[in-house]
Image 1 (cartoon, rainbow, N blue to C red):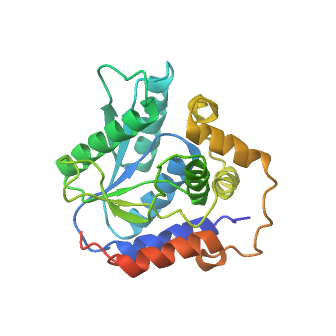
Image 2: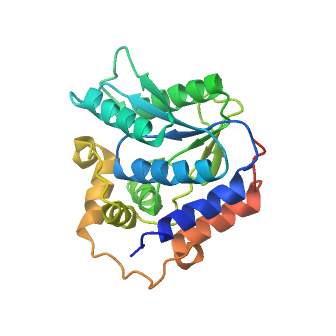
Length: 246
């Protein structure tokens, strides 16, 4: 299981490889309040502070849960604690009766990209993990066209996302490992009940995965010691640039 410093080292290695530590542009991080994005925000804040970079926290309220305003307030509190800029965003208007997860995802990317461009950030950090890779694969096995999240990718929003890139530095670790790391740090997080709603394909994949026995952990988890994530990163490194200049 990842110890106190291991997750920060894994994430930090990706940030060092992908980002220019001397850039004056802020680094944006998408914070939902869930465990994965909370851990990423905490680690990114330390990384940015050590390199003199500004961190901007972007939180999207989708308006789909009566507690969502409270979740945004929790994210604002974390931003205040970290002395980071906070930018609350809202998905307003009519919500579709069909295809809600896809519509919410598209709206989220539009809002995040617009906010990033407005503050001069060209990179948005996102907290996807190896568990998201596994869930995407399970969804495709059931007929979904859901793509696997990539470590480095352009924003899918257009035209809002032009010039904006997404960086997912936690694809080599599982959600369970991230939760353990948070517990070791005395951190709490928000669990969105939609993640357990079997009406949605991702929730079904997540619930199915939760029923399977967890594989044994390597004694000292390293980036290359996780085969699935290593294979993904190998493909990414083959076809993508290694660093963004801003």
